[in-house]
Image (tube, rainbow, N blue to C red; front, side, top):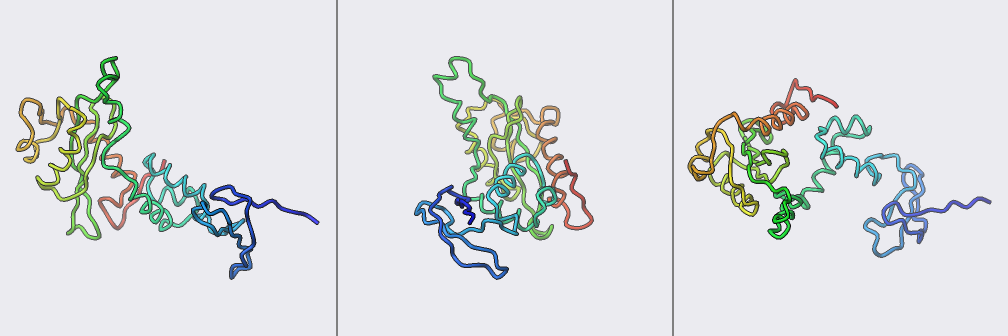
Length: 228
């Protein structure tokens, strides 16, 4: 007689009991660990999108500029599975880059730590459902490193820009590079504001990369996303 040691895929507990079978006849198991986030699982799931390692890979690929269809083709799963997993992460997303913000401790900056002093701001057009329902991605990046500092989604109005401006206040920025959109000239001090395309090349490059990798941002039909 052969015994197979079964461990939970989610908490690695060995407190496992059988819990019937699925409609396909696959054995289902129940984790009796009270701290387990899931409880029930399959040892050999026929749906790759349910595997924990695949879910982690979806997040990793999205953070590395892979589109929804790129991820689905690479992992051999449905694009809807990718979208569902990304939507689950919405609650833990932050509009401010807290990793960079933590480096702004004055005591540490006194020792010469790098901190963002100049930022590029711009907005990128997209739509929700139809092009009659447009939305803009307002965001700011560090002028020297290209790291995203903060972002806001909304209409192309002064109110949305002021939300982004409030998120950037803790960074202590001393210079802003933008285009000539009216919201920037109305709400930024001329002494720290430098409008023009000469110093916004990094953020414009990011926009072009997003539109190339995820063509669905600007078009619904007859579009192709560039794969890595």
